[in-house]
Image 1 (cartoon, rainbow, N blue to C red):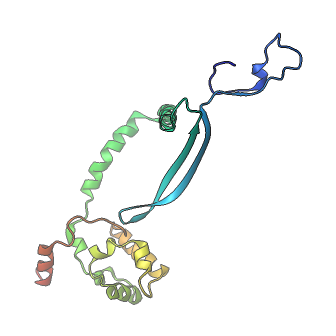
Image 2: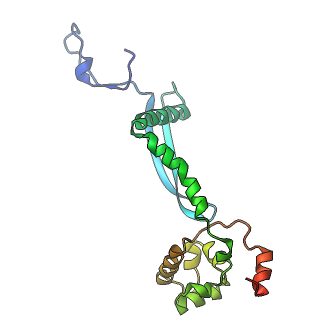
Length: 191
């Protein structure tokens, strides 16, 4: 019995002077006995298109499962570091600033859905679901809209295309919406 690391094939385990009939075998020095993974759907807030990774790790007891995963992640990170370029890091740090510049004005969310120029069928389905403002619409998910009576994929795709042209999408989370002060201005015809 020897100490080692990783996997050693039988050819390298042969030793001279062993008795006749000795059969060298492969050696596995890993403390990990078995690994399994499962990917399941996960929900984060209103968004349902995320994945959840479940790892099952069995060890021989010389190391905990958590420590094994931590070491594996560290090795992977170290191996992938060679692909990083300093210019990319600078570019990534600039991205949040660009998003702030492209922030959508609040007034857009208080516009009536009639201004989206949707088909009569899609517009009627939304109104029957008590969706009257663009802000109410963008907070809905695809699944929520598809559950609406007489609302199908064609209407969904039409809405997604119109919202995309405006820089909006379904499933958005809006802070402080609806704002009572802005609603009063809309009702009073001031906006």
